[in-house]
Length: 600
Ligand SMILES: CCCCCCCCCCCCC/C=C/[C@@H](O)[C@H](COP(=O)(O)O)NC(=O)CCCCCCCCCCCCCCC
Ligand SMILES: Nc1ncnc2c1ncn2[C@@H]1O[C@H](COP(=O)(O)OP(=O)(O)O)[C@@H](O)[C@H]1O
Ligand SMILES: [Ca+2]
Image (tube, rainbow, N blue to C red; front, side):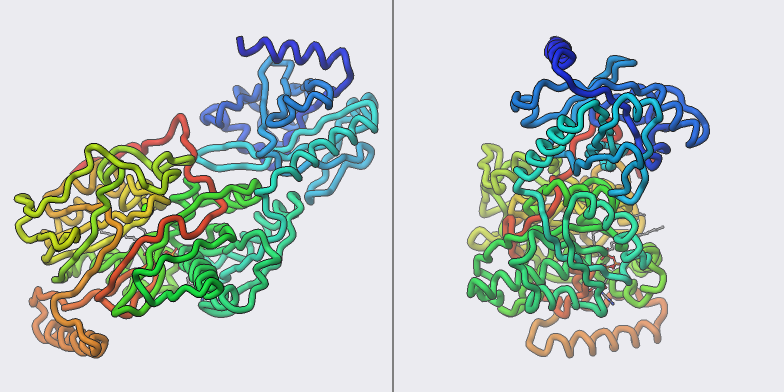
């Protein structure tokens, strides 16, 4: 059934005119071609996947001989076909290849005699094609590769008539211009010190050539100090000139962009950020992330991979994904926004320690994580939260937030018949109570984490809260109570396997709209002084009595990789406050579940 229209189309085409094509795969993708047999790439099948020549030169000759491709489309007036897809057939093997117009990156005419150097690499036509078909154009398009990676692929079409060639180029350009969601002008900030300090190199070598190919103009700023990008965005940047902003760096750099853009938007709209109850105005400009940091969990959890080329291609095709942002206040004073992790206890202590070891690069987190694990401090306090009861789904269900997520499309405003009713007495939780819809839990905690998205990252591909949603207006509050080191290790290890990290007696998780935390001792205006004195006092006591197993009174909050100055905070989720140049993680037919090494 499916083959019939294609067959008809090909007959039509042969009658008219059109192209004989040689599929001119670029050398760059050769490595992938050789291993393609193992991969599934979104239903695209190539004839050259079974066996391959050894050297690159042999590969080119082999591809050229193998891939005699007929370009089959109907006449240009027949817009129906063109509206969404370009389809070409690889006649030697009878397979077809369709490319959505929305995933075409660029089209350029080729000077058949001397090739083209539009994108920085020469493409020489095979001699035979040059003689027989003196005109050609190249279409660059997105090809799906292994594990959510996207790559830029080229296909070159040859033809007999110059006018026809131009007509095709013109038509494809018109189609691309009609895609209004694509950015044309971008403001780019590069953190040269993020991650392994490769930001500038990554941008120049991997991203800038793709932006040039897609005719995107950029204004690039290499930051000179922390908060440079935030302050520039908040005050100076002429945002009207741009269709989006891009950061090259890690989660900290992304956080700077969020603070700059959100603050600017609130100021322009007369909204007071200091009021915790205030409804914030969403930002219109989209943010792109080129991952070049240490954790890059926002990129990983929204794209599925930390890969600069993939992220650049998502920016070029103009993807858009709304995201929730948490605002953090202390005593009616705005502190910070958070998009990924707000963590007190384990992640706060780990971050505070790791900041002193920046020279270690991304490995500082493993080192400080290990050290913090050994110190095994717990903290006493009260967590109160407003459960999100009017939603479908729970933090423990098996659904995952993926591209086009149904729950996020409805702003999380779905009513579930199974949603638990709030009852005044909960026999399961003896140390919790309800006050006006708020639930209050007192206890001793190793960690208090709020994940407003999954926080998936290479260290934990499913993340801190695997079922969290990017844009549902809720955050998953994870409470890890005091337990043995062994049990805490079991909990941590489960972040790296398929086993449920919440299925442990000392762990609970709640999907909430707001929450507050108050440490047991304090909180007064002189909290900061107390904290400093307290820390000094405890460290003195512990130095004097090394066997002492007491915990300090306070930890710090890790807010997307930044330390907050207060332990007592109030947090509210702002549904879909920002937009990213991504589409969410695309479903893949294979490789979705990583094999788990063991369960403990
Ligand atoms: C035993 C292995 C345990 C692995 C547990 C992994 C849990 C990982 C959850 C990660 C959540 C990440 C949330 C994102 C936070 C970022 O915003 C933020 C800033 O990122 P940036 O530097 O790119 O700007 N990053 C972070 O705060 C770093 C989080 C990294 C956590 C690593 C924790 C490693 C723990 C190792 C414990 C080892 C115990 C071994 C005992 C034998
Ligand atoms: N030019 C700069 N010099 C020093 N710090 C910077 C600079 N630009 C940005 N920063 C800060 O560096 C911190 C870490 O940046 P980030 O890109 O997230 O890297 P990482 O993932 O390694 O932490 C952020 O807090 C950011 O504000
Ligand atoms: Ca959320």
